[in-house]
Amino acid sequence: MEQRGSQNSIAEDGAPITGTSSPPVATPFRQEELRFPPLPTHEISVPKAPSEQLHPLIGLPISITYSAEKLRKFAERCGGSIVHTFTDAAFVHGANECGLRDKVDQIFSEAATLLAPAYEGVESCADAPGFDEFIIRCDNAQGDAITRYQDFERAWNTRRNELFPLTDERVQRAETLALLREEANALQREYLQEHGEDFTLPKYYEWLKEKAKQEQVSVPTDASHSQDFISCGVLALRIARQKHAEKIKQIAAGNLPDEERKVLSLVAGHVKVTGDLSPLADRMACDLAEKRSSERKKGSLSGAEADTAQDLNTWKDPRTATVPEVEAMVQLEKDMAALHEEALQGGKDLEELQQIAWEMEQKVSSDRELGSGVIRAEKVAGQLLGALLPDSIQVGDPFSVVTLELTGGGPFNKAVGFAAFGRVLKEFVDLLQKELDIKALFRQGGGKLHLVVPEAFSARQVVELTEKLDNLREKILDPSQYNEQDVASGLPSRIERAKLDYGTRAALYASDDKNLIGVPDFFSTAVGVRHLRYQEGMKTDNIFAA
Image (cartoon, rainbow, N blue to C red; front, top):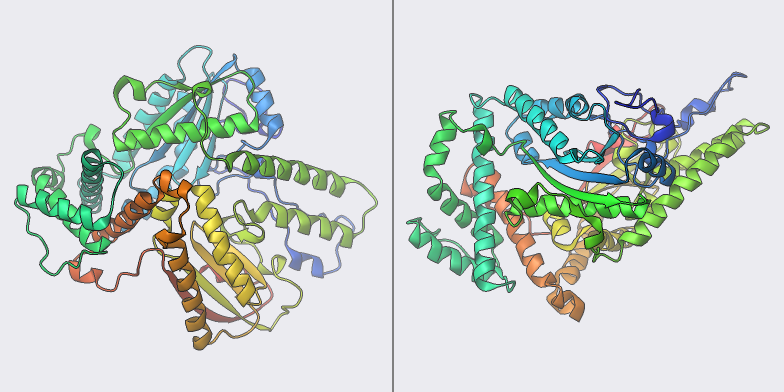
């Protein structure tokens, strides 16, 4: 794969933007293959290091941040000034909920092809760290890095309009929901501007009732709003629907101007880096660019300032977890390189190679926040399950898959930050490991855990486990547990707003208010159990299907 404007290859230098949409994917180590006598030429495939892994749909690297060597070489080829751009697509979840998942997958699978022309002839590389977001690094020697991004954005919008025409009723519904969600968020910002950061749901509901009177919107008569985030979400959306009634009609008629479309639109933040591009500097630039993108979404960053790259030297990351996290990932890259070098040395028998491959698989598949022993589901999707299970589970043995999902994990994550959310989730994992004989533990997405346990998990055990998890949840959300630093940082207010965000999302996708009856409490745990029997060739998909 050739980098635009350069003769350097990916293997040597990392993550070029390319027009190829179907890159080669690393073949993971599979334990079952080694149960048969190998041929003399048999080789064990080993997993790739984090900086070499490719996004399965988009085809771009997930992240080169943690490869000091790749970053150093990239910076050397640039002219001493690099612009980092973070951009993500808006309302992807809403588009999926409206039946557009196949079109969403298609436009993201074409992203690398759309990027290539805009960045042709310049040193650049792109990552796809999540499903709906990109990080683009571009040499700014000519001062045109942001202009090139804008060329990519125009190409993206053109393709979006082709795949998501406003004549499609699914697209119309998605655009309507995106409009309502944006207005609900604007109402919250208006309240905060008037009343400061002292945000509670009861106070906000009273404010919404006054707003509803001004907009001549009916207030639900059965609302129990003392702690009801659902009622706040319902009323905010009623106000939004009344305020934008004409715009909603315009969407239904397919007459929404391109510049007012929200679904799958890109929102970018830009940061300038000068000097060395170390893993820590790269990570901080990515984080600041994401922060600026978020501010742009909220409306606190706009106009010419939004299209200007902030100098990284002007920002200090307030999150203390960033440095140790980067150091841990850089060390993982070094460990993987050492293991790979050891595997390539001669004189090792099959059992020794198998052990090396196993160690590499465990290292590269471990969850970044929860650490060794917790495997990222996305990193082992489609692999043979036997490579990840201990030998105590043999062919024909029964086992249970216990799946736990934290409701409102996304809003909670956004309220407290990735590092704090990881620490909270670690408390849940510690409780589970204490209570259960877990043979394998997978994390999927933000707040879903899949546990493989050897015995048949009974209904009584589900009830007991749920009670213990609920007790932990109440402790975590109990305001009396917050320390002075939590209170000073506005954590109680952010938790309340996370509850509101959760309630607004629930109300947004409900076809009728009656469907909101029985919505689980914020940050509660849903527990599901399936009973399986291990079979040769069984894949991880059997685990994640819950």
